[in-house]
Length: 139
Image 1 (cartoon, rainbow, N blue to C red):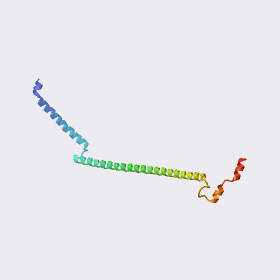
Image 2: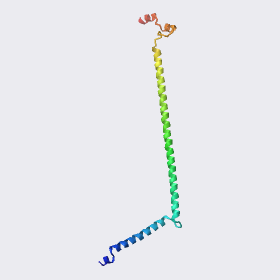
Image 3: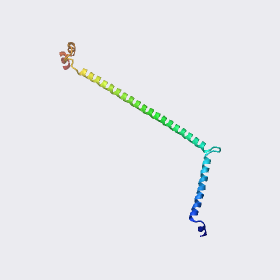
Image 4: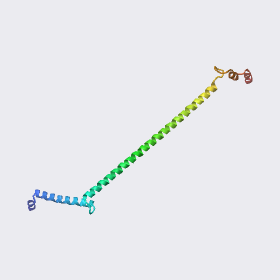
């Protein structure tokens, strides 16, 4: 009881506050002093931190530019290879069509009747059936 009378709740809270206040001051000065080497003040440390941040920022920008260039180069290579593939496919299709037309022309010339219109007299004579052929084939 005597203790309670000596230390009222307000007094206890004030003592507690003083204790933490002193503790905060001691921890902040210790942390700042531990970060700063001996013989250097806070301004020098802050200046070095800013220069280090600037350097890191420059490096990150440089890396971003290099990565962007690399991505653009890869995209260009992909476009070029795709164009080459499409060009090759078009060439193959054109060659295939050319071969088909050639084959169809050959078929038409073989199946064409030389005795038709526009053929010369010599061609009609050459392709005319000989009456003697039937005799030899039938026996």
